[in-house]
Image (tube, rainbow, N blue to C red; front, side, top):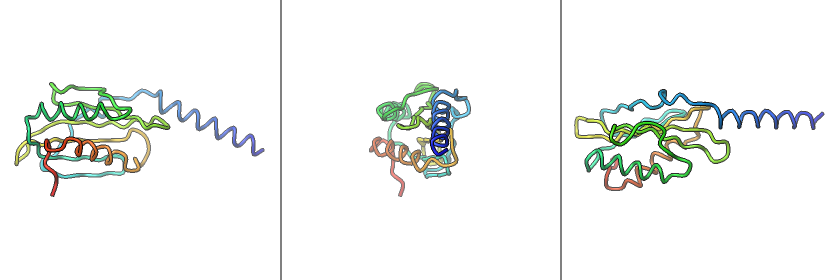
Length: 150
């Protein structure tokens, strides 16, 4: 009996993993410009948004973000472009292949242009902090192109 339960659980896990990896995503759900009016962070249970003042022209900052993003493991652009001023990247988790979407833009703020990065999970109720960690890593790698909070 235990053997049948374990086999059943294994089949369910396999079907779930295949679904996560192969199910199509509606990119238009995620490829929407995030909005911020001031520098700061906003966290949710399955998302994280950061807005930072920038110290270089918007196109230069977006090119730097693209370099950082595409050098992140399992990450590639899925919509938009630097020229468009809006890019969405997909990052998949290593084990199960859960997709997260990170959308980047530069917008005008009252104190100057803001880089706004919104990272969201497609599946689940919690991202276990991976979206926040990714955004913070990208910001750190941008160095002097963004003004730290504080």
